Length: 249
Image 1 (tube, rainbow, N blue to C red):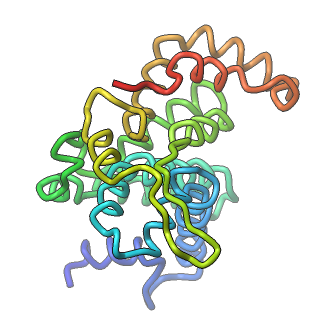
Image 2 (image 1 turned 90 degrees about the vertical axis):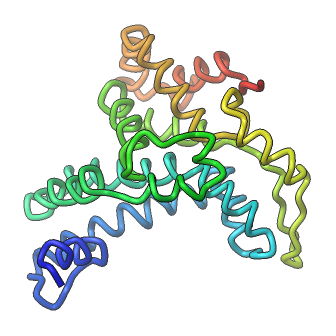
């Protein structure tokens, strides 16, 4: 195996037998932040992620699962990458150097989205910007976290994924689809509707914040400095909700 390919595999799968204890520690930290706290947050704390997790348990709905999964890749992978790179950089001095390696691996050398688009019904309608499945979503969350507050990036993740597909799992593990598959498909493939599309929601939110950056920066700084958002509510969430409500075609 070429040394470049071996390192790529090693970086993705934690370590190899040649890895030092330090490399192993760095990779474990990166793995936990990305998988457990990034993807884990998506599948357990967001409405969209919880419903996607149900679909994974019911392979008889594979076409719907594939479509919904593709629609959430940019947000899900972008948020997990943001969690990983942001909080690796806040860890001890032995762990922090892993940020450079992981950023290069995921952002600069990440591949696969263009190939996926060739057979993905969703990405044929919503062409990806980058070949890396991690990059676009990361750039949005990174901008929000740096321009406003880290909590704002998490809040935007929740808003973007506050999507009810009508997927219900009962106590006997039977599944119910309260929205027809055709309706979900039509809305996800509609490039003008972000009602069920977390990728478009994230794009719209990020653009809205960019257009009003100075105004929101002042409001959020005033709130977060005193931690009053927990009592009075998040000004960012209120503004976004009032702006979009959520958009239909």
